[in-house]
Length: 99
Image (cartoon, rainbow, N blue to C red; front, side, top):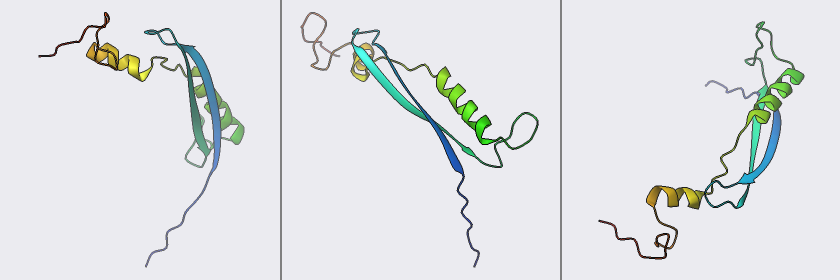
């Protein structure tokens, strides 16, 4: 039988939290996410050498700083697509009839 070798590489993480307003309802929205990359022999720089931990950390932070979240609520997206709110009523409170 063949033995499986498992290699674990150091993980570099950066998390960002940004707040903004929903473009549809105007309510405040908070978005959070984590960016991650490992220091491994397959992660190479432009010169072809293995990236150091500081290079990987810099790249992860650059990627995290570029992040632009979508502040639209999921329910607001549904309203935009279906044309109705979560109660099945139109803008004036009238029932929407679907064919």
